[in-house]
Length: 548
Image (cartoon, rainbow, N blue to C red; front, side):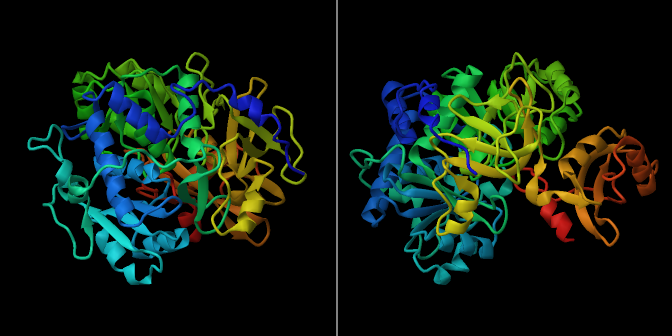
């Protein structure tokens, strides 16, 4: 049984766009007309105006078109956060081509897998990352064009923030590649962007594991980015002409929404950092009087732990949604952050690649700690019975289903996986949660990561949340391990707070858990770790720990 989708047309009317339902690159061009000299992006002190950003994107689009790139072609973007990423992103979309972002942490085998599965005709990458492409270039059947760029080309003579060594490497153009800056300088700009179908043409193919399996290319329509960005502004009461800090990877859907789209839609000035460093981030917040920052909770904790942080002026910050990766966004952490900055920190949102993320928002005047907030305007969330697919009432846990007019169109060349996930316009997320009586969403786990202990369903996130009440634990991850008597038992990987290593044992943790949670789900095994493996976005790699 699948949910109806007839209400989506009415729901979409709830969105009030800044300047109409139009592609995001149109908003870039609009900014260049309305505020040509205003600073759009800052990269270690190098300022890029709206005029320069739009002109560079139009010229790069002209170069790509001359090289044969056309509407519908797949183009890989394999870069750290930098101005070139934004320029390339909009150049590709101006042609009606499709962006497929690659994580800059990927190695050659991962690059080969994604570019080949996407059918990429071109890739734009950093010179630091080109060796990964070069190693598999002969294996990529459709790859015709490689454009490379040196991050140093967009660094100022006198940087205003500490620059990582790998970003400052001298300019170089590898053999058999085209240099991005030279292409921009020499190409004629396109006169106008390619005409696109806002509702149906594909603009982005982001690779995700979805509910299970190896990464698959989720095909997102042109309108998804504008729709979700407008909903973000509308639900949070955001304004134009702010200053944002973008650290989350642009290759990740959340980092893309806040670092590549929100600044364009809101005509913000965005300060780009390619990675998180507590001291550099604190300097950026203070120097540029940043008022908008999307963080993950460990970032906030690391800044709070800087030795001289109380002497810094971070009072400009007024909007700081944060995601619970590694450690949760709790009222206690938020209170510490507010005491330092004056800014109310809270859980950012629930979302996934297939829905262009940002499916919920947290009302700043009605925060519910532990929840993911309420559905975004124009977005619907239902909880359905995992076995029957029937909608469940408030308070009952089931699979989270998300519906709106701009969810993904399917996984490229994976009809089986598409049919499993996309039903009648609804994305069946593979996540488990419930809605309370006031419409707040609570995420409790993933169906595929569910642990079956003596016939009971145990969700790892539930165990981890309970274990954070232990005074010695700063972080934990629960996985299922085989148990010949119980089917599975819970094993807990634990990172202790400083000073506790000699104070508690693994058995102490087990005994505490036994006293503080149901008998069927307390961990039978505990292993202490100095740290836990995470993705570049800070999400703990539970699967890697389970495979061990």
